[in-house]
Image (cartoon, rainbow over all chains, first blue to last red; front, side, top):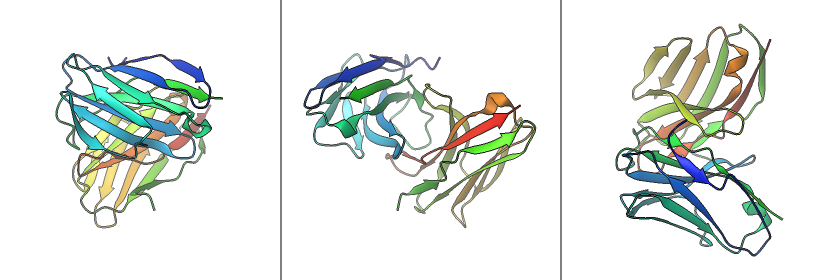
Length: 115
Length: 109
């Protein structure tokens, strides 16, 4: 158990809908990362927050947004969902600012299915 | 071209075999290299990390980095069925984490 929690574990929704994924980092970790994992693309970095501020942005679509709250939990919002958004979404956390040498601790993921 | 290339496999080997998993990267700014292991329906977890060229050993696992050819390897000796998982290589040089697609390894008894 990494100490990172994600809810919900599974989510089934329809195209055009909006969903919110939630992540609680390990106790003491200040950075939160969001990833999308699919069979054809692998693990794709979406966005990273450090202590409430956006720190780095990857291949995140404009339909997606995220934030980190004062208690350090984070939410990833996915809107106008398309079939291609079906994937595993992982949250990870690390102790520092998100520097490349930091170990990331991954949650169990949220499996999203868009029908 | 992706910045980190990794053959997705699957790679199927008999128990006890030596396994070699490999990645190539294209960005010379990458200085930090890690291997994460991901079991089915779980999140990735750090297996090994190295910051320099050469070998790093931990039990049955050896991580190797060759910066001159931008090549990263993970060797597993005496492979066990419990090693069956997807292995993702990570290369870092900035605040944008970059993972390979992962190689699926199956060790059969």
